[in-house]
Length: 472
Ligand code: BG6
Image (tube, rainbow, N blue to C red; front, side):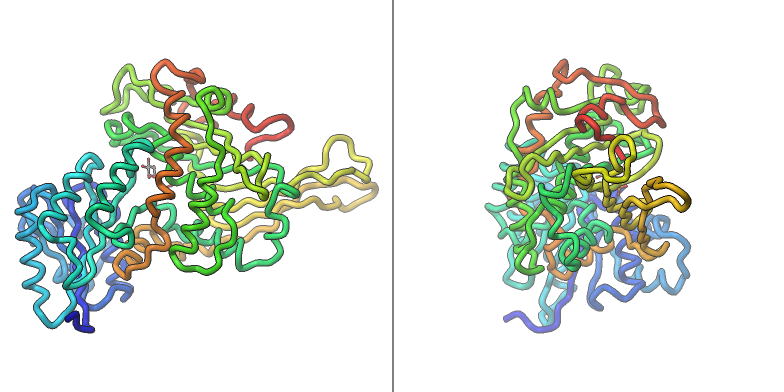
């Protein structure tokens, strides 16, 4: 019989890696420090490296900015280390017993297993978790958080889902996309569905096209080996940009439950037009920044794209014929993630201005300038009728935006899957991106372009938008 009081153990598999150091350690610390975690919540780092508990805590402390000794002591006493392999069932069985003993019989023994591992280790780790009995929910909940990339194409993602479903229920699986943990991304839902004035315009009758841009100023840094196998389509487009598209294009869900929301996202992703290689060639731009092949870990003959732009259509009554143009790239002039919704121009210009009147544009800025901008046309004061585009702006106050990992880790601990991907969303997203991956294979089409680091990327990407449109 499961008692009322619950103890939660967060098990980080791959704890000696970069993700624990950069994101998970600091996120857990801040959650504890802000009083957000359940009282009886502890963490176990697992990896093959030899560490004492003390040495593991010291590496975690290095990852957290200025922290007082007393705050740190409160966190450190909850953290321990277990040396073992995530793909070895015996090792995980030992860990399982150790956690059960520490939990005792008076509490429900809830666990979150976080796979902070190389994606190639996911299948064997899932198998070892199942074989060791660690996923058995008789004594408490067992959730598994799986990092992106989830598969490398539709078929591999389908197989990984199949494997995961053979040992767990869907509600035990938390596929993470850290964009879904960003406040500004979650705000898309609130902006759309807690305001009545935009939704009537949110369709093909009023919207000319949608631009989704996730641009980065940094190159591949120290992740050359991983990135060279992935490229922009797998690293950014299939996950973060697809989720942004889904949030912008989905129908209003009937409620805010995880499944109501994910049903609508899956529905709209399933409606993105399936394309063939010819379409992919004619409607995408790929490029590599100059000097990429000299980065550490990158193949000197690499044909991996570090910049990509694609044009998609959503075949629904709401969106028929409205282009969704997505672009992402590394080593560009600035870091900026935003979605711009460009409205149709007035049917007639009565003010005698030559050329087109500027269109209204709604820009949802994910980062770094977190907020919303609405561009509209005004009269310039003075004689005559000069028109000028002005902007109404809202910005979140500086410092209030939390790290996405904090939010998502807490959600996984509390069992809220709303901001995690369901299996069908992942598979639909790969089905959208696979034709572009195939067309771009070595020696494929369109031609690989180059661009200067620190530039705006290849000019050819403008052409994707179509006549009279430009990137914001
Ligand atoms: C990750 C990609 O998923 O997202 C990285 O693997 C990329 O290549 C990062 O740099 C961007 O995230 P953010 O939150 O900085 O926009």
